[in-house]
Amino acid sequence: MARDRRRFLRAAGAAGLATMAGCVGGFGEGGSETDAAVGMVYATGGTGDDSFNDMAQQGVQQADEEFDITYDEAEPESVGEFEGAQRDFAASGDYDLVSCIGFAQADALSGNAEEYPDQDFIIVDAAVESDNVRSYNFDEPAGSFLVGTLSALLTGTEFAAGNGETNPDESVVGFVGGEESPLIESFQAGFEAGVEHVDSSVEVLSSYVGDFNDTASGQETARSMYNDGADIVFHAAGRTGVGVFQAAEAEGRFAIGVDDDQSVSQEDYADVILASMVKRVDEAVFTAIESVINDEFEGGETERLGLEEDGVETVYGQSIGDQIPDEITEEVETTRQAIIDGEIEVPQEL
Image (cartoon, rainbow, N blue to C red; front, side, top):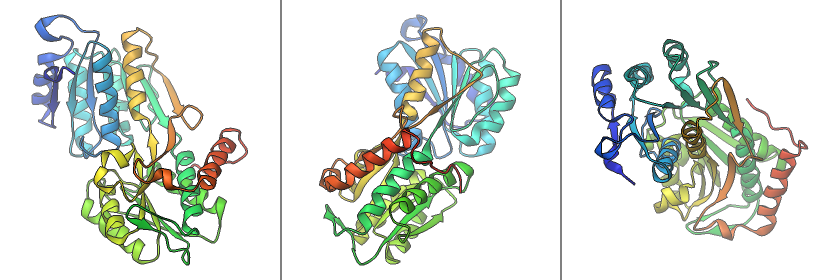
């Protein structure tokens, strides 16, 4: 990958961002024109979260490997910086596509899309109604329903693998969210519904840390759940979720990751990660860039990616996932198909 054609633009201020972006947009090595130039505006917390932002980055990296593109990256540290980061890419006139990663960018993008009608944008995890914006949403509740099903099946089973084990005398599982929002609450709603679908007597402990980048609080919250009897904790909390894995490791229990296969991206904790609810943000970013290159980009539409499209899926842990009993993984797969077939209705909110 031609990493010298990529630059990080870390919330340097409006003028700084615009100046740096204009240096490379649209041109590769030797000044030759590339297939496309892409501006990436990540969610707060930035890259290195081994989760949501990193999945988006994998999408643009895949496009860089397969096509002749350039891309620049902005990593705003607060919601208030989204508007400026988006605007600086758009105002430069150098970018074929500006990718806005995360639901919190919707308000800023609504204004910028109107101000720059000739700029193509995408947004992930929100819908912005504008002819120059393509929106990508995922069926997080359905994916979370499946890991809720898995959790409920295992918590009542005597099961040990890696560094974790369940207590079959307790039927308790947990959910840790990052910032409380309709999107993250939809993960919780699906997870709790999946648990109830299996066994309504299983207790679900749920808590929000209030941050996607607070590993210490994630560990403290999850440790409290394990001490209260939870065998398994599922997180939708970005880098805060690393603390959940740390707590699982310390308490000898299990965890479920989110967004990417965290048994790989967080391999130090692979011996307690049963599975991850993977969300293919990488595919959304890649296909959007590909559509720009092929002159097939269509704004003004919202694309929803669910179980049938493999937009969300249960990926079992690389280290211990294959030790989960077949009858349990088979039931999870049966449940998946039942959701696709419309036989199970998954709640979209709490």
